[in-house]
Length: 303
Image 1 (cartoon, helix red, strand yellow):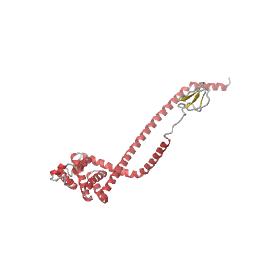
Image 2: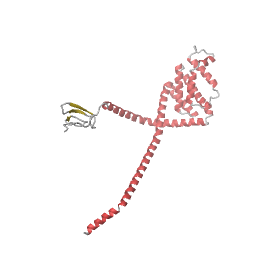
Image 3: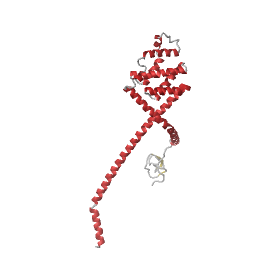
Image 4: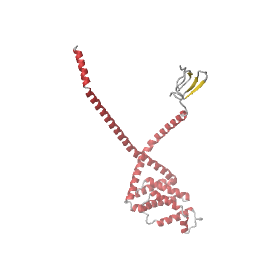
């Protein structure tokens, strides 16, 4: 036996006897890869959570800005040429009593849209809108109610009960709409003297501080959203075009049916021993003598 053969044999024996080291190394590598996978997954989840945390306020900002835009559309229509001046008053009032600019603009627009159709001229309707908006905020503060609910109740009261008119010696059948509203408003103002001005008086209460905090958050969200909307609008238009193209493609190709290709559901003709033809429908196997397509595959004489 040559020295070279002895060395080769020794190497084989050493490799064979020391395979436990290789096994331990592979096991360690496997554990490290698994740990890396777990760490990567955890990092991915954290990134997803971080992305959601970042996107959530941006989404809220866009929605707040969208609401503001819709409110201002109505505001500008109902106040017409005086919209800019009325908006200045509304923003100042919102700052004084700790409410959002969108909320006060919405209250003003809704009230103006109530009074003008009743026959009040624009200037008088604006005066009444300011009065009702202020009263709604004060009553909500005084009675610990939601501002919007109070405004809704006031609007209903101004256009509601005939009994209120009769109590003021006003015949509902002959009184004009403006007279009815003014009579009801006088009744409401006389009955709410204790509540008037309460929003400012109790601005330091917990409930009003919470409303003020939500208003500030809403105002900031509107500011963020107003900066994002000009960027997002073109993107939404492009997404809409893509969806349209996909829909057109689906309409063109949706009614097509795949024939064959899976080995089942094919059809063909099978000529039996007696010369008769049997149709194959949905069978993968064919009897001898069949020709044509069977099971969706290419047909031929099957021997």
